[in-house]
Image (cartoon, rainbow over all chains, first blue to last red; front, side, top):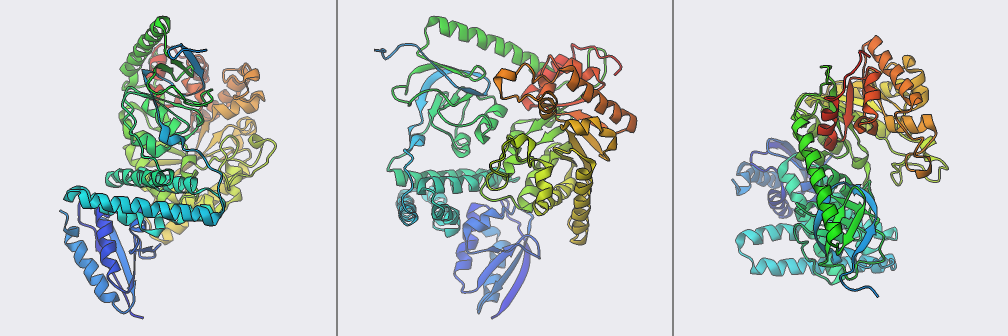
Length: 92
Length: 536
């Protein structure tokens, strides 16, 4: 199994609230790899494919998110997520 | 036989004072008939079908909506189709709960988590979940929910926090056939000044919708179809209440000072972080008591992050003023199912407060860690309830030491909060000199009932349950004088401080810090301004 990890700061105005959470989730679901995020490098880890769980994290603007993925397309999945965050979820 | 317009008096338990005059709106969809639960398999099927039905209805709406609305509805679909949203409900169904109740309580828990978020974007998301909760309940009940009219007196069996928060209550009131004066909704109603009565004595809501009525949340009465005399009496009370409120609001922002110029610190007691949304920190000298039981009032104990965010938000609200947070005080009159012991013959003398938390050190330490982390963002002080002997405070201090060591090792931002104790057990008041507390806070409610051996909730012995009794005052004086000699601050956070008759006796002991319900801040300062205090 391939593993990958990266960290990024949320720069969009509203943080990971409903709409960005759902965008993140929909993107993650297009990959076979399992993808998780956390507020601290040590976890606890949250399944990025569940919008309810991602919203529960309540990550506001400025939060640093840690991601890890496991699966054949782990690296591609995280690269796509990094791009979505850098694009501010196409919202602002 | 009664005519349609006969005057009728309905009494209940006062839950939030205030007066409202308006038309009754029966919140019928809240009164869904509570079916006994069928087999778990059948109930799970009912819930699964209702979720599917609600999701299809939402998708049909998406088709018809313009882009902006559609995007919002699509988010609701995504949340509804996520199994994480319903797994708690399916778990409850396995345990024999009906589909309706299981779904409602699982979603209420989720909603409360958002209402307590520190970020306003997340607080605003609660309403999405309220919608989902109601859509699925409607799919089960086959009814569609009528919005509650404004400035109405809403009559229902019970009211969820979500339903309460989704409505603008200006000019209106709440009458519940069931419900509790200690519920989340009752606390919110009190902090927002919305009149409310619970346990209304009536067989059903039949025939009351649309009727003119007068609600008095302090007396606990609802007068339906009032006659001229009832309306005149109501108007007079309303006028007097406005006068008193105007007097209190003049003093609200003033500093607490006695008539002869002695400054008295006046702080507030809160039970729920949402109370602060409507309060300006300028009105008080800090928060003398934050109750944390509400946080623990769900299906699962709150984790460290959740607690930390709530405590941090409170600390930041206070803008540098002291914030005294009481560690979990469950038991006694505040049971938490699955946590407090059941079947105690006298819960007030049982495993409650610090006795219970020391018994569950893993839960206690989680709370202490969250408090020490929040202390990084404000002047947080930790107050331990129900201390009887010095070893209980020493054990708490060791647990706090260990929490601080862990946080240092993990490099998490934190600060060591002052560790103080409540003085509410007579033994602690009598031997106060033996306790190594950073500060003392007198809990006058429990202290009075333990000293006088008289419960406040037992009407027949109410004449004994008096915080102004000289035995109680003597113990308070002893604690205050101990604090003065050893330079430890002493405050009082029970109902006695808000009682105009008892306040002079308290100040006479030398007490110079009190904490009252937010709604009593103005009245307490107004009363102080009339009192001349001797040099205690």
